[in-house]
Length: 71
Image (cartoon, rainbow, N blue to C red; front, top):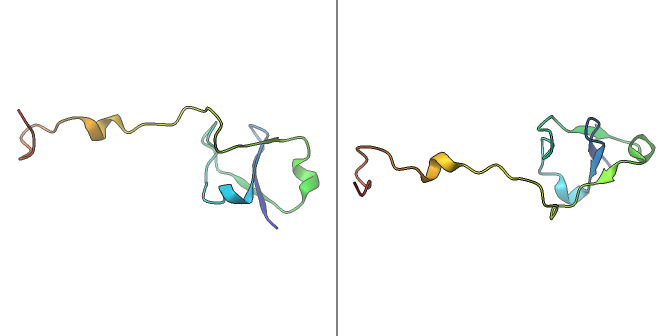
């Protein structure tokens, strides 16, 4: 079984987090680890962790001159 981890944050990820490609904390690429010994002592990332999630604020801004712009 391949596990994913972020050595800079010392986080390890479950198989359920396989869709992740970057670390939610630092944004660096995750590394594949084939041995559990290599990530011994790493904190387990829980998908429900209260971590800040980037929000696409520009998607909510009106576009001047757009046909659906209420202005």
